[in-house]
Amino acid sequence: MNQHTWQRAVIKIGSALIAPDGRTCSTEFLAPVAQFISQCQQVGKEIILVSSGSVAAGRQHIPVAHRPTIAEKQAMAAIGQMKMMANWQQLFCRPCAQVLLTADDLRNRTRYVNIKNTLNQLLKHGAIPIVNENDTVSVDELKVGDNDNLAAYTALVAQADTLIICSDIDGLYTADPRKHSGATRIERVDHISEAIMKLAGGAGSSVGTGGMVTKLQAARICTSSGITTCIVNGRRQAVFNTLLTNNPDGTLFSASGSPAQARKLWLQHTVTVRGALHIDSGAMDALVQHGASLLAKGVVGVTGDFQSGDAVEIYASGKLLGKGLTNYTSKDLLTIKGLSSGDFEAALGFSRGAEVVHRDDMALTGISLKKKSD
Ligand code: GLU
Image (tube, rainbow, N blue to C red):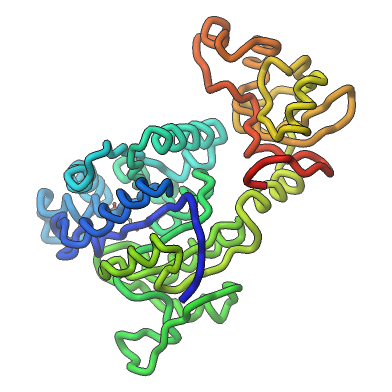
């Protein structure tokens, strides 16, 4: 068995578990998932659920003899999404929170930051975020398309350390176990090579969109960003105990580095800089000595024209200190620089939170931040 200690995970539940007959929602396989999520909350582990099933759950209300058109499928999703959410909510004492995303939302920097902040608030307040693609507004070219990839992007935006994909088979096999009796499960994959991708074959169940291919695509996206990925059989209740005790029973795809390291490398080397923030010595001390976030109070100058979510350089006394993602636009910062966060509302009419650059979104040049998780 694989040992993997985790703290914040995205768990993807596919249509095959939500609507096993392909027409209506069922709680048959969801009760163990809900119990697992509640147990995670009790031990301080954080979970974001990515749930499919809206199209399948709405199918019986838009009966068509032919293969459904896009509009018919979107109508099914609009009905089914409500049923699917209601299905989940009845299994939890805590509030479930609906988060509907499109590929466009994930590409747009400002919306990306808003999604991240919303997910953090939901987790902080003990709610269960339930993410799905916003199928009613997503036309094909704007779609992520399948919930395996959507779950991978959700794990990135939520800065999760783990992605758990619940399937209806036990993991990745050396051949399709439904056809080849000699097929064996692969316990651990350290590198998702082309040979591994070839093992995926075609689509799996007839209910959901993705087969093993999209699961491996999701694993590739996540592992290259420091997020460990597990494919497990969500129909087997015992699997959830193994997840809870950090010994996932399935196929584990190991991550290269930690999410924090991967994020800092990405920030340092990949992201395009759109402007700069100049900070005073007090703020520099807070950043370097205490691994703190950058607050508006310590910002003395703003250059460039940037949006929230953009990367900016951080300077102290004219020296480059590092890079970070800003929560505020350059225009907002010209207004709030030097202010305490309690004054943001009065100055801007809104607040995006106290941090101008959160410490998780910051990479200091040549300095390792003194931070618990670093
Ligand atoms: N968003 C789709 C739905 O809720 C599911 C896509 C998938 O199965 O991957 O029906």
